Amino acid sequence: MTYIRNHPFYCIHKWAGFFLFGLLFLLGISPVGAQDFGLVLRGQSTENRGEEDQGDFEYSGAISPWFAAPLGEQGDLYLSGGFSMKREKETPYEFQPEPKLQAWYWQPIPELYRFELAYRFATNLRINVGRILYQEPLHSILDGLIDGVSVAWHPGNTRLSAGAFYTGLLYKKTAYIAMNSSDSANYFDRDTYFASKRMVFSLGWEINSLFNSGGVFDLSVLGQFDLNGKDDWIHSQYGEVMLKAPLPGNFTVDLGLILGLLEDRSGPLPFSFAAQTGLIWFPPSAANDRLTLGASFSSGVWSDRIGAFLPINSIPIGRVLQPAFSGIALVQGGYARKLLNSFFVEVSAVYFFRTDTKTFFDLDLDQISLSPLLGGEVSGSLIWAPVSDLSFVLEGGAFLPQTGNAFNSDAAVKWQISLETIFSF
Image 1: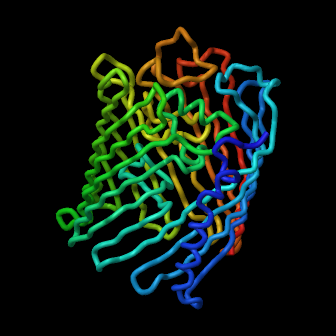
Image 2 (image 1 turned 135 degrees about the horizontal axis):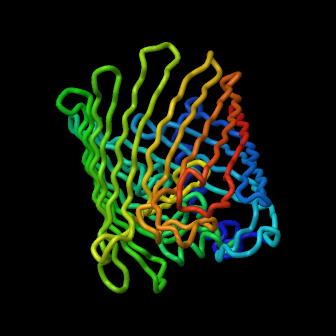
Image 3 (image 1 turned 180 degrees about the vertical axis):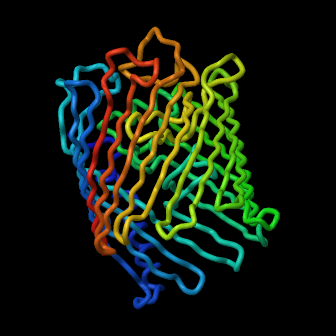
């Protein structure tokens, strides 16, 4: 079965003519000698294992062309897309069938990646239009490619920004929006392609070189409005503040706080919050060492006044357990080092907590336990780049449920290992 409802293969005729005309016009005003293009080929094999009798082997391959060109002296155009094939296991929305009843299938996925037109009206005023990369300061509310327009003004060491975006034309597994049950059902429905329809607005104020020390202060406000027309609609607003400052001895520290407000058909919901802190140390060595320590916290369902923090896109945290940043807390540490000229190695350890007993779900959870201790996870990666155009990435990790008290006593170790090959020119 392939995607049918809202699939770009079936609705592309509605906008393909306009898109191609606009693209050809932009290319026509760009100097041919300044244009650049390339191709990225990716192949990844992944082995996952949870319960003793359950193992999942997935393979994905992708071909991704890209194109870049200047538009006069003030503008730039970047375009990238791709077509991927992924062998994965069908998982119904109910999450209840036995593993042996879940069928394997190959899924073709066409996707427009980054399509961005940037124009500088002055030395300190810039506008970006298209499918652009958006990242709020803490990368915990909305992070990734999104369609829309953003404007940034840079008076001195200050940056003021505003943006308006729409999520309904993104591929659902790239956007990863699951704010309510309708979003989740859409995400696991193989007959749909596009993500949940939501409008997002953002305002930002950033001060660089704070107190002439290289520090950064960032204040952001985001709001999203549900346009899906379902009974379980949900709107949300967020206020976010982040402070990053260098310390003596090649240390950098950052602190961040998010306050969230939700609203559904019953009215305003309890407010929520999240917080993050991190410390990075760059030892004085030729190996480009990096040592990181950090902690993150998101509120859970505590009372009629405080509820679970709910980000716009639920990008998983962790490599193996992969919970969403909702009703979850963690402490983590990592070390990265460059080996020789072509090898880069990184290792990390994370310990997960749950901040309530309602938000996080796993089939192996002990339904009686009230313990906040989920368990620890260790992971690592090795990157080998023998030449500039070719790299191999080996990643692996394991989550150890018996290091906590929230999982069943017979819960097996969950582990994952993957090998990715990337060729670009």
